[in-house]
Image 1: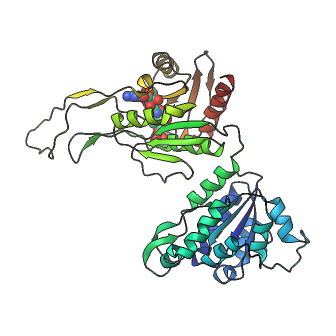
Image 2 (image 1 turned 90 degrees about the vertical axis):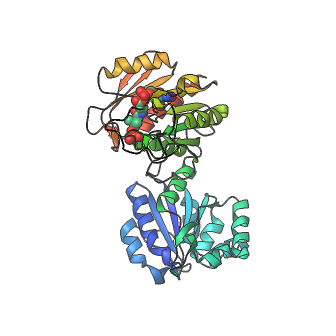
Image 3 (image 1 turned 180 degrees about the vertical axis):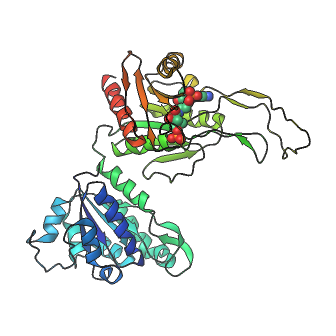
Length: 396
Ligand code: PMT
């Protein structure tokens, strides 16, 4: 999504300006052309040389300086931009933008562009929560600016509060989402499940599995970046929450079933990448079970089969983690659960399946088509699955 896109990265005078170097680096590594515009105050916190070295582009700081490439830089950048991102954005620049003031290179570029504009505020908690700043942000929001954050946490003053620059993953996720708005899943509503459900035994223990949530999160991010409206239903994971995705946290299979039923009431596609427990304890002990006996017997009962039981007219995609007869076993599940596609996971390969960043899958469709893919990143696998979903949606 970022490859070959032109991103104007505005940096303003906040201590968080140093984090913009990381943003510029990640965007550049993803193949974007990053045009950095710094306010004069930003240059007190981080040098144009740093940003120029990261992006291999000339950093623009002065409205009145011609560059070898652009004779009117703010107009040229405003027109070239696929998206303008201001990170960090100070209270001062937010106020100027809300008032339409254009007295430096950055504010002129923003006023001149027709590209979407993302603002990631960073300032002290008092400045952020000041009604003037909040009014300015609301005004910008109402005019179509996309506001990311701020986050709660340790601020430059050493105090803890709201006003921190949003996490970099969240800012980059929002850029991806904005760039993907007119892509091949634009307007489609996709529900994704992720992670391993946890079935409680007592107040401290549960039955779980080794799913990290990586496959499901990659699915959700890929669908978001292709323009879909994504609902992610996730069991507990240690992954950062993807930006621009509606997230529901659940723990058990029964909770996941309820969340899936609600989310799919208006969905085009359900993709179940979660590893859902097949059994749950028949009863949950109210107090912690003491280790009084040498053995302990738990009585387990079946959990609901979400894919089989969920009602509605939408495309159904299941996953199957298999260690033998991968394709045959997955095909049986496709038939039994009446799926449109099943993604058979070969979990015998150490680089495939649970916990790792890569996956080796075979995509099997109801019409018998079998597509075996090489070892790919989970994000690449997600895009291959979505290619098939796009085909299925086009036939409906
Ligand atoms: O999370 P990661 O660490 O990235 O790992 C990814 C993964 C290996 C968990 C994922 O790629 C995967 O294969 N998920 C499916 C795991 C599995 O084997 O599911 P299953 O064969 O038990 O179920 C088949 C399908 O039915 C799955 O889509 C599952 O979500 C669904 N199911 C299962 C049980 C149940 N009670 N209800 C369901 O809907």
